[in-house]
Length: 388
Image (cartoon, rainbow, N blue to C red; front, side):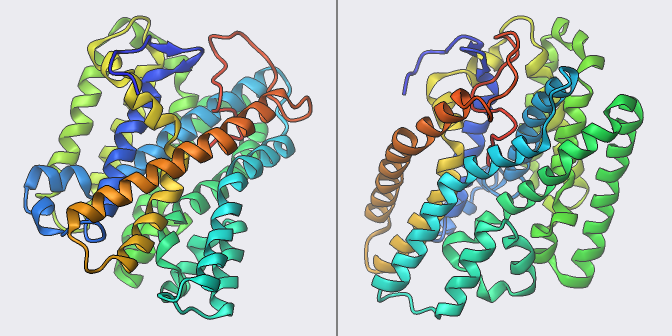
């Protein structure tokens, strides 16, 4: 991974958005490592670190992914080539190349790992709901039935369910863009209000994973993409990126000083709106800034590009390793866990992700309609996904 800042774009990818996802995936991995690879206290006793590592990070994945997916769907719509079936097939391929091997690992663990004794029925339920992207809905009804290795994949279910509707909404209502934007904002606020009701009735875990209570982050990302024509002037104000980035970091830092479930409350709305504004500001830049150069560093960009693979596989590695190394010193367990994760990510990126991207880019029936190289974003066509 390079240490030198990259150009503002790599090929035609907006490098700074990759870097933003790279920062987010670092916080997600570190948060899930606490209590599994190393003790909770030394990290969470530091207020600043606690704020950076606790809830809200996945929201950025929702916003960035929805923004880029919607941007590409709008481009197809403008070319009169928006095809929902192609969109769904691409997404199934992009996610399937990660989910199917993971389900295979779950089967192998049941067969060969003596430290985990689950039932065949439970294994079938987990695998079925993972592969049909209903894991979050099933988990909200049967939390104890979900495998600890895959509890984080509620995120992909929410995203996939939201994207099932997205191209149809655009086909039907994009011609009335201002009204559609207003309706989406109302929908996002209604989702927030419903989340508060669910917290009171069913608890924060259910409210954290239901599609109806977490889809507002996706909706804010979609709204940001639709607002692009109205925000082009932001490119003349590079300070917008710095202010949005500072606000996003500030919101994360204060989170640990707020009530326990603040990441699901009003704070979440502010965080999603600022994240959407930051993505818009980065996209509209007409020249690099200090913030965009920082986000475009090679190391962050590589992490962001690999964020789906990292997200899917980091928790299974940590959970299984923790189950087998209870007597190990935490530094050794941490080094081992991260080394295994890095090895898995490198192998899957080279043998699975890159060939899949090439296949989707070259397949005549599945590829996006071509346009100028300044607008096409490799890897983030409508079938793409970021954890988000």
